Amino acid sequence: MIINRRILTLDEFTIQQLRQFPTATGELSSLLRDIGLAAKRINVEVNKAGLVDILGDAGSVNVQGEDVKKLDIYANNQFMGVLKHGISCAGVGSEELDDVVVFDDEVSNNSKYVVLFDPLDGSSNIDVNISIGTIFGVYRRVSELGKPCTEEDFLQPGVRQVAAGYVVYGSSTMLVYATRRGVNGFTLDPAIGEFCLSHPDIKCPPSGKLYSVNHGNFFQYEEGLRNYINACQRKDKTNGGPYTQRYVGSMVADVHRNLIKGGIFMYPGTIDKPGGKLRLMYECNPFSFMVEVAGGKATDGKQRILDIQPTELHQRTPLFIGSKHMMEELETYYKP
Ligand code: AHM
Image 1 (tube, rainbow, N blue to C red):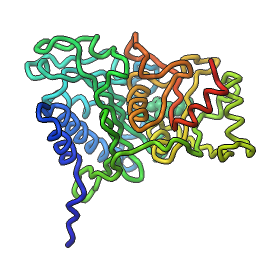
Image 2: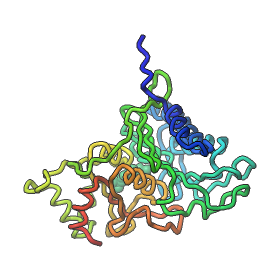
Image 3: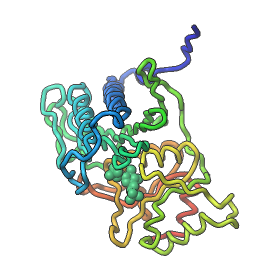
Image 4: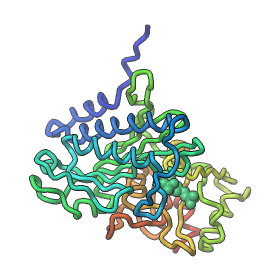
């Protein structure tokens, strides 16, 4: 039997990174390990979704006014559980919950980080066996250590994230996370139940051929944006057009694909919903952090997503994100 010791597990990788900082406390590594554990548990249930009676609405409506699926609740509870019982997290904000949850106990009050997460994004795709995901952003708290964390710790602009990541439950399950030092992807090896480093030092290609947008909303978009979308479909493009349209309707899958292959993902504001659909804190900030670290760009059309000062936990924002040159091309058409 050949054992490939060049393949690092998520734990080995985070410990290796930690050793490069002799003064580091290991709290972030521990946090990532906790998140990896929650992801593995969620993965087991996602894989069983077609087999057991876990499908369907749980009968409640979340704070966004959307139906909550049972797996959403399960995923939310898994994340809350590992973060509450770990040693690194003082509190969490979840897309599924109205308010932040402050873990007011001695260990948690002395923990450096708070985490904002969307436990199961794209959950309307569960019933039809399409990839879904988990998204998270980690912030260093600004409140005093030793005391319970406060709302101020959560309402920080995305640029202050120390780490962000996602898990995509797809044809295989991957956990991808970024710190300022780089973006790395780990694929779950079901034989050993470990995330193994499969995509080291991910860079978003500066150009690509994929564009992702909900075409059904086309006539709800502003004129400049419609012109850009039309240009994506033309043959006379100097940069290799026409582009290929790819839109799963599951943000984690869509942005993951474009991050690896090069592309642009857009969820603009519409006439009916000028603020768009996606959540700044749970979806846009983590992805913007990762894509920027990988060399790409992310804006709301007017400004960098990571510079937006949040005013409320569940606020929405238009989002344009992806390969640097494609984003620059968009900006020549669309100046809201
Ligand atoms: P959901 O978690 O309720 O399914 O909503 C979030 C998803 C994103 O993953 C995806 O990019 C977007 O909604 C798709 O929206 P639309 O169907 O309007 O194109």
